[in-house]
Image (cartoon, rainbow, N blue to C red; front, side, top):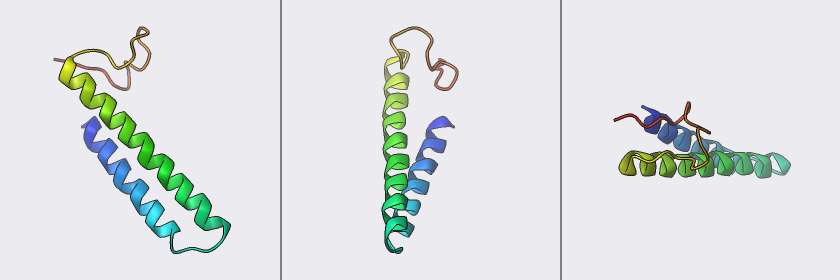
Length: 74
């Protein structure tokens, strides 16, 4: 479920980036920046989630930081 939502966010980020490419001036740069940030964030979060699922290790090695958002249950 969480991975699916992250992949939807990746698609949404691409849509924002593509729509911003049609604009002119400052709106184009801002839109492409926002789209790129959304895509990068969802890709990194997806990679961390897949790593956590495959290894069984928590995402953050410093205790329980982030365990509510990305808890690994087996």
